[in-house]
Length: 329
Picture 1 (cartoon, rainbow, N blue to C red):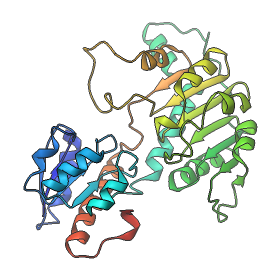
Picture 2 (picture 1 turned 180 degrees about the horizontal axis):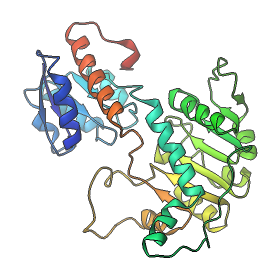
Picture 3 (picture 1 turned 120 degrees about the horizontal axis):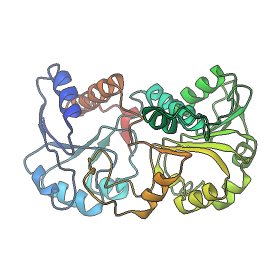
Picture 4 (picture 1 turned 180 degrees about the vertical axis):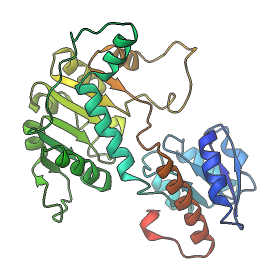
């Protein structure tokens, strides 16, 4: 099998080449450009392509891939909201993903965001470098004894819930499919979780039903001085309403590893450019907001797991033994 990897960064290449030694029947070519209608034609002659979280896998792109003979789409991530699944099914393109590469990596980053924005670490780091040791503007809150609201209690949400429990927090959870084995989580309706939590962390996939689930109405339900963290998908939050809430002093802090309109920025260096998006610039202007670069997954262990699972997916497809747990239908 020959696979064309789109949007391959140095760390992707290093990680996959290390794992590829174990799979002599699989050959990989890497491209630094991502897939779109113009670059999809480069897949001609390949058995499969590998995309990532923001790859353009719309209907037109899938038709081009199918025309090039591609019948397997490997996603080196858990999410697949960027794929036109109906068209993929109609064309007979198999989609395999990596559903659980390192839940702890994402959960740990979510808590790192929560702690940093709570105690204004990002502000203090800059102040101390300028020999400013004043405590003005650095007041935090204790998480111990407070309530954490976990929206989505899959593997990542569960890992975050355990971290919060370890901090001595009461843990509330909302999920369409509650996991009753998690006896340390009190499941409530979404409105109750939003209303009672001091720390709210989003850990759910993006669907039609939960698009902009955090909006003006749901923000109004939250406590004043709440901390909001999103390491899932940017579109879960209506950014305009979030900014309005920040300006109204609703939030003690907001930590975002994902945000709307991030697509053109993810994993790219734009230091020498003027940002086109006023939304992003406004988010970055607030002293109680931290934005990171979609890096919650980015640990050595997670990259190894992504590489291994992606290559195992390809191997199982070749053998006609597709792992149904990784299959997107």
